[in-house]
Image (cartoon, one colour):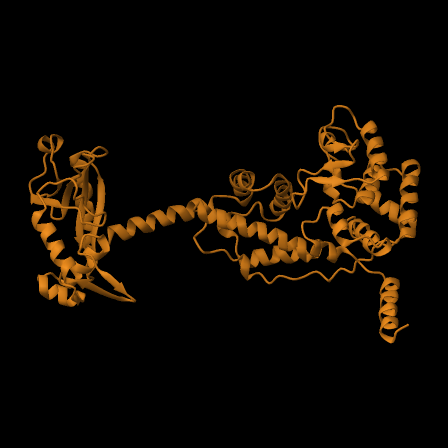
Length: 476
């Protein structure tokens, strides 16, 4: 066995085959076996000789030797005057490329595998080296006389220095731009919601998108999509931030950015034209959360009890607010709580749309008592524990008015409903000294680190902790 190693150049000289042909054989897997040493390619003489013997012994037409995927398709080419008589009856075992003898460049291509016939015009763009093969049409779609007419028309354009292929591409692009100009943002947003949001987003995210899309339509809906540009988006962002907050405006722009990418996919906008990342975005001032103390909790609960009798708002709103305070849940987890998700006998509610997919949420006895009353008060034809105050099948939408009334009645400063969640955790970890792991499981956090963010240590606890450590250091 000859174990000498040679490189590709030496193999080319040895076999008398072009260097590039050997490289192509190697890529297609049809050449001799080779050895990779780092980035170097080497051939063993024994493998070369075996490959040559294999080619020598290869019988003609053996089906074991299939063509490579990258191998060039072979065509039989010749000239003939085009006529319907022989074109209709054209048959062949190989691909054919037939040039017309009357019109220069006009070609007929017969595809053996499918039997389809297509006509092309081969030409060279004037004053350049660009060569084109322009598809004129298929024989099943056009008559031969129509093909000739189209070919003559294209040749006249070529003689005038034009490029028909480039003109066709430009016309297609112009039609796409014209189509985009005729599409209004409000109509496209409806399509985006149906084809994207409903398919790829959770139900809770869809509800949020409906609200955002409604506000976008109010400001930008009557514009054509082609007229939407960076200056208009910046004005919309600043107006939204002034009216609401930077975080809300950032959510709106995030949805517009996703909507823009969808429009690019459906060819309403050119690719890579999204300007949303160029909008200068702001940040809200860092919110200082002051959790409720036990005394403030009592004052607020008393105010909520007063709300049942002395407020103009529906008692159902105050009941939901009370359950929110006693469970530490998120607002929508209570307002959209369904009756079949409440298990008062075992002391749990099941939150199917919870942010962290934490389905089972434990209940304290006061919360169980309030939910039992809520279930008795809820209409029998509603699926929700807290149905809409105006009737109908929907859930309670907002507790804002009842929340503001109760705060004012209790003499407490303004605070978010989500601050009840902070307060619930802080009472457990700081006031009662419960392990943070237990509080984290009770509140439904997936990570203890998140609970630590919600847990606020009071100044009194910090002072006592520092005092105990200092006394331990001095030995007292």
